[in-house]
Length: 146
Image (cartoon, rainbow, N blue to C red; front, side, top):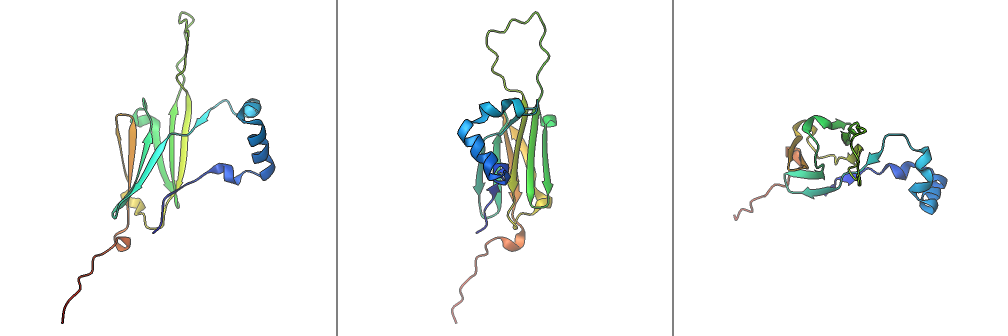
């Protein structure tokens, strides 16, 4: 059985950089980051005989702010939340809304029918259905008695 796996770009980092990041944490690297903040939406991945399903938490995003793209054996998910311009009259006491770009990449199993992928959004949950190709679905074989 093939499985859908998450693509983790940290695995591609050189060992020294990964060690540095683990020792000192992300706080030391803040000055080196781009202005744009990258975040990872939480996901749940399930499998049935017919399809894989990826459900990602994207509360507050409009469908126009979400991009899904299949390139080769990768499914890319990107959602961008832009920060509203603050007016001087607003006196925030606490401001915890995150702004930035949510990014996830998934490596697709070979049995996904990429041309039949569907995506739906409901109550802040993006549900991506990745149907399996017909020839890879399990088939029940009848045993005959002679």
